[in-house]
Image (cartoon, rainbow, N blue to C red; front, side, top):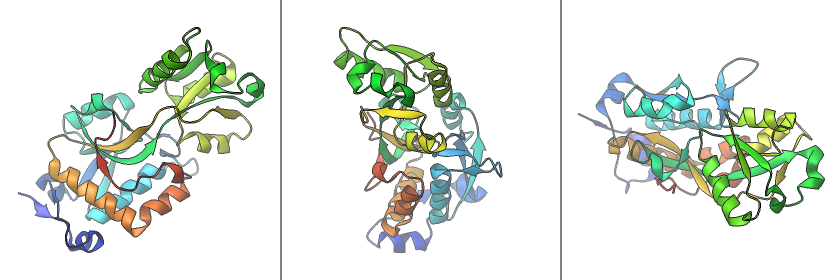
Length: 270
């Protein structure tokens, strides 16, 4: 048995929008269990002064919960455990800067809330060596091996560096890539364009982007494939936050305005 969302959502979205239904177990619990890996600022991280969760995803999740009238119960986990957790029902959702890619659609359905892409960057001290993206050809470039970055780098390299392809170096996340970059073990690194400005603010004068975003992708809230009611509820809630200005304010707060979407989409990633 399922119940209708609160009337407040109807007034926000307009009477013409049919109300979605939340799963009965979520309604009974009064909360949605959401997986998060708090190591990807400004999307999600621990406030160093309070050790509490913060970031764009955290504030967006809390806003979605308020719109739905449901508490968000954050479940900290590892990147490798997020998809198994949603497949086995240990969590109801993943909201942790996860890229929506087609290869993940068998395991989860994504409600997309950001449009972004990867950026190459180098140490600022080597700026004269990397005046454009062509200078990356033949160089050692690092990125998290657990993401789709390796494939995106390979595609770009194949298209632009036929004579001297990029030498990819897998890392244990974006923080490790930056460490290896500072140590000189790699020549350049790649991470999401939505996160690099925050890192550059924390470490002024250390990094320099090379070129622009070289592939368009979506970040999505991952939900169980069979929970169509929950998917539609999240779409309506996100569209409500876009309509009432909450989403725009959060984008501005976390310097993500360039990556906002006009409306929620489902499985837009390729």
